[in-house]
Image (tube, rainbow, N blue to C red; front, top):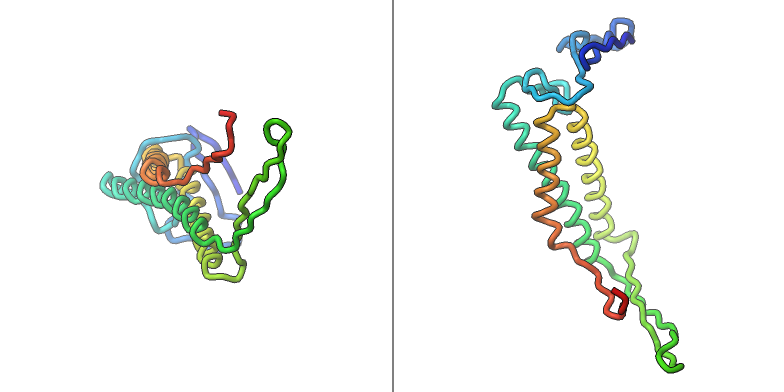
Length: 178
């Protein structure tokens, strides 16, 4: 493989490889190694998905923005589903020293989930989807295209803003040190 660096781009020469040649001219492809703002010849995740016009970039921006928003919503939805699917509840009491030499009983609640259950299977499928989307967003960001990077960051931020306020906050009412 011949890697020549020029103006922040890497040209890849695959003439010595045994792989079949690609119809889109892989030898002429340039990979940006710095952030840039352009909408011509921008590959998005797959070799056949190439952005060449401002309209295509605008569409890709909206799609990536929505994907990043969906990713944030999926994270919160999984947490909510997990809380709803917790099935086994166990209470543990333990003595703790109280004021003036008294003994108080402190109770802790432990919750769990069964491995061979529909909620756990659903969580597993949603986890796989979440991981795939996270890698897609990472690869999109690694195109170094400024428009697409902004779409990832803005979509994630908007998704967090819209969905995370529903996130449960655990407050221990027995905690007196603030």
